[in-house]
Length: 610
Image 1 (cartoon, rainbow, N blue to C red):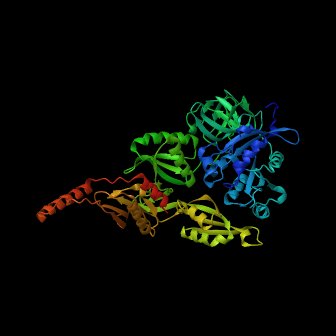
Image 2 (cartoon, rainbow, N blue to C red; image 1 turned 120 degrees about the horizontal axis):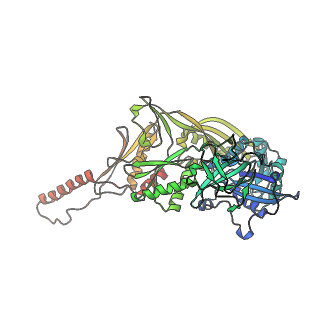
Image 3 (cartoon, rainbow, N blue to C red; image 1 turned 90 degrees about the horizontal axis):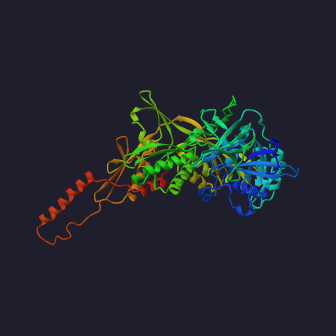
């Protein structure tokens, strides 16, 4: 950079939106318009470097990039852009990003209007006192309806037509005006350049050569290579191996000044030594007050992950350790199953997060895995006063020992066209939801097509797992959007349903259900298993039990061998001897035989589990 950039010429901002409203496409146009990358280097979704992100068309990890822009006033500005995920499961990534920014570009799809995650991101940005620039995206599409969406923005968010930009991230229309608005509306960093150095960590990952790479924003002071720094919360000290910014790849520089966003290579061997939300300061001239941090990520959904082959356990353990270095919100601990062997009980932010972790483990590390049915964390008070937490149904104590049981509840915000209110309300009732509030948003005149509704519900988190999201999309023909937030724990009455295959408990199939669901769920599971488990040379009973009571049972018939095939005539006693011998063999085999449940059975049951 030939010109010296003053602090007043720095702008730190992010792009926030509902999933698939065009964040990554807009980031591509901003990179193109500012000339940050050469034309031959530009590809679609520049910021989405992960294979899964490109394949699914979603952003999983927040990415940062530095843009240099010559404004109409003749000055050169340094714009630090952070592209954020849009799916509700990755809202933790968004919250970390907002704390490192001074403003946010709010994207709203001109064809879809305000969605659930749009509202959630706006409220989060307001909590961080960010300057918000509302922008109507995808104006080039034939289905764009700016009048209707502008009415929603005015009604729900309070921004007028003159405050809302109309742009197209695909064609680049209006992007120049957006850049000028970012410079005029978003304030420059307010840090003090000669104060003791303070920087906040908003992300980190592990590099095998440089150790932990920490993404940070310098709030006060500056950072240079070879500086001795320390984390104010943990007290860990380090020497800066490298300092730089993203372009979008790592670009080393001599220093990061007050207000700038970039990275440092710490040389640390564990991401846990550089916790997200901690404050970095200088060892020699330390700051006394840390910066406000983040709430740590709380796993909402739990599932067991096991290798298909027992010999792959060490490879799975190494893969989990490496993945944890790049995904701070992943939680895991070792677990042992009598049938599945050694594996891990993992905590995820949501079902999409579970799916992404599973895909990355299989693709990036070449593993074959079995994933058990997802569940949530329960708080149990036993009759002796002891309080325990249960995430694995196999850990649930006998019903006679339980005095009180609590489960997590969430608040759902569903935005849908008015014509789908009935089917969605029916779905909520079926899932144990409690209606809180209904609000009509957007245009109130004209046809029902223009009317949309926001439904607020409270419901147990366990009822959201597996098929709820698919059922919501099905009943709304794909138009409904969903956002949820954790409310807390409430009392509940649940029991454990066990599945026995050939009298052996298979804890991977265990469920925690309500008493009135036990028989239906048990019958569904045993019939599903009967159709999936291969026949053996002996009869295999499959039972669903609650405590010691069998609520459902089916038998898998034995593969028959005709032992009389070569018996041509002779006394009947000869045939009886052969049949008796076969019967004794089958009885012995049943006692000592072991039924192998194939991996495909676990996956099939997981996919069909409701």
